[in-house]
Length: 242
Image (tube, rainbow, N blue to C red):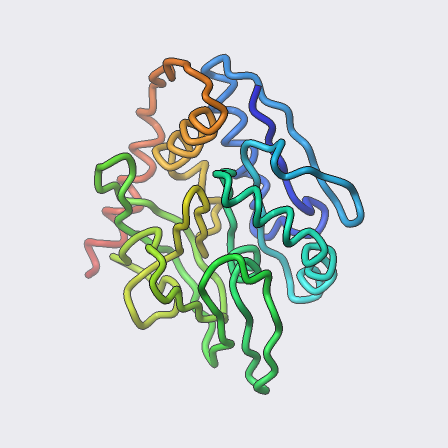
């Protein structure tokens, strides 16, 4: 059984981000891989090392301020689990929180968890719209689609990006990169939500979680005709205008 942890589902569910958890568990279910969903809110106990997939979403500034103090108390436990290979998907505010700090327009530096070597600074312009990136998934270059809406500009230093931007802004609208990868941690600004739109990425996260638990199981091939068609529609729509 894979244990799926949704952190702060009552606060961090911007743009339907809960759909990422639904997509992960549903694609497991279609393959007869049992899952247990564990929702963790402020003050509730959790041992991250016992989890197999952790989702951390985005929220408004107010909601993120509420949860950040609680998450800082869990920093060492989360960092240890990540170093041991915990599979993590962090979106938008969750992505920023894993970094070193967030620099506001007033010059105030808000500390992050410091788990990943990245930082974010407030931008003067919101970066909004549909996005296409090219991402390496199991040795193959795959087009990943989503929707971004953020004013923070993130810089990932020497970390590997989740992908190269083909359409949209990505991390900061400057360097052509979107998201970040570290061990089994995948970060992105892409809402929509991300996993229901991108079955290949979802399946890779499932396989990484199974591998971490040394669960030897032949992953059933699903009929992804509709999923592929949906991605192709978005890719064709955005790239034909470039």
